Image (cartoon, rainbow, N blue to C red):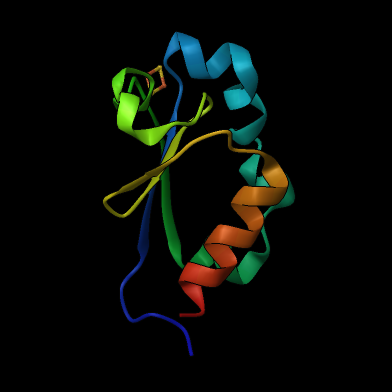
Length: 88
Ligand code: FES
């Protein structure tokens, strides 16, 4: 089943994230499934706070899906996470 509302996705393009792989995540149109793409509102934003939050215990790059921040993000992890959220 696909969610009724679009998933909010913010890709951090702050310096810490951008230089540690965040730039690769901005190529999302090349690696995300078209169904996932159609069901997400994706935008690049400046620092989303993950790099300053010691409780996360992860490193950049960070993305935010709805109101949750995920670190050490890769294209593969982003594909899997968004597919899971869209089809939840
Ligand atoms: S620069 Fe990306 S979370 Fe701070």
